[in-house]
Image (cartoon, rainbow over all chains, first blue to last red; front, side, top):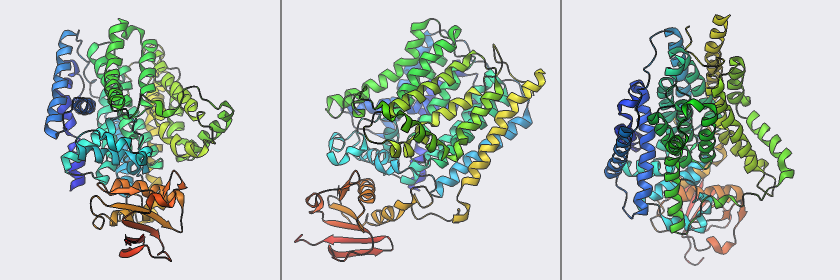
Amino acid sequence: MTGLIWIASLLLTALAGFPLVGHRAFAGFPPPTRLVLAGASGAVLLSFAMTVAVLTGIPWNVPWLVVAAAVLAAGLRLVLRRLPVSPVRGPSEAGGGVIVVAASVLSLAAVAAALVATVAGAATSPDLLFFWGPKAQQFALARAFDAAFMRDELHHHMHAYYPPLVTNLGAFASMAAGRMSWTGATLTFPLLLAALAIGLPGALDGRLGRARAAAVASLTVAAIAYLGIEADVAGNAEMTLLLFETLAIALLLSETAASAPTQLLAGILLAGAAAAKVEGLPFAAAATALFFLARPEASRPFWPAAARLLLPAAAMLSAWFAFGASRRIFFGYSGYGRLLDLYPDHFGLVLSAVGRSLAATGHALPWLVPLACVLLALPLDRRWILPIGTAAILTAFFLFTYIHRAEDPSLWISWSAPRIFSPVAVLLSIAASLAGGRESRPARP
Amino acid sequence: MRRVEGARVLFAPLIGGAVLVGFALASLPWNENLFRRPRTLFDRSAARSVAPGYALVAAAVPLVPAGATVVVRTEPRDPTAETYYHRFADALLPGRRALPASFYGRFTPAEVSRDAEYVLIVGTRPAEQPGRLLLETPDGTIWRAAVSR
């Protein structure tokens, strides 16, 4: 029962995000997509409110945190009133019913597989027990970030500097449920995958039409499900990261990406990615930079668009780093060592270890199948620069990170590569929707 | 021609999704009595070797009071497993102080965990008993340490 309350409490994030996503600028998204966008943006605002509460010495309290996040969302809604609002194009006309049904069945089966694997204890991430969960549990008990706990040398393996969103949500759910639920935490994998299965088709619909949007969403959800089961992601931060990243990219590729409200919402989702995992920051930076290259017509004027996309992430991480520095626990991401302390002679070793690791994860099919779909979709329209470019930059970043260790990194790669390369599978899946030469157009099945 | 292209971009993701869902379903541990409730979160995962340690630390929750110090060891000694189980103790025994028998895959000096009030031993019962036996399970034993240690 505690597990159910724990996981169900996360649905309150939709309440927190609704004042923003309820704005008429987003009225063109179908209700399920709006609900998921409200939940995702609400989670980001909730986490921000928790971090600011700690900085200002206010103890956490479940109802007030929801209210604070909703007030933030309402404040952003006021910002939207000052921005030019072009209504989001509504869902395309009915059609492609058989394809939509088939794609929905596939997504449902993928979520069911993730749920069965999770409940059966076949997909649990040890990292849940190693650091995500203990930190969330301790923070819930302390009703704040527990500085003494984070400083303790015996907790060095808990990576105090890791960004706070996932532990914040875990602490929030633990306070709501009365205690940490390890089972509840593992269920975030199927729950957030289901959220993506529900919300993604509507986010892609305006650009692709119902049938293609449903087909691409089912490919994306299936890739994450298979990868997540094979790489044991239940309970860690991967699924949260992928939810934010996938929705953000879908918005930035959409027909309404030129509108200020869509950019602001995409910026909040990118902030969620940056605050979920360390590698969310290079993702957000790369996606923003490549958005300007891929969608020049959608990104003018430059500075306001850049502000909408980057300021939310800057605010999230500034608050987190301010906490770390003010308590003298960590300073930025210095825990990763010096940037240019590299061991380039390890590069061949790293490449072969990454190859072996991905091959051992579902025969690399979560990456190869979306890649095949991209190849079949050639030629792609100009927007390909955004997902494929982001995948390339992330790949370079991960390889760069792996050559930072003096010792043989093979073991480290074997247990981390399938998880950290998971956004690449998602980006390839989304890129498969970009067929169509100069401009994409809804398919007529 | 355009119809063929349209069909290709429509059906490729759908077929790709079907392939991945098929493999995902096939990857489930069907031959491990899939729908039987697992004893631990790790019973059928790639990390199933840590399941006994998880189960023993979870069994210690009602036996180790708040504020107590606890150490988890393995029998025979295995610094990698002891590192994991120390982390499990941190997770599953909030409010207690978990002292590491091993840290980052290396044995710690004996004095680090010598004063632990409770000793959890994953594996076989040790030749030298560390105190008063509180619980014995197929996964290991839980002891109240002898005061004189």
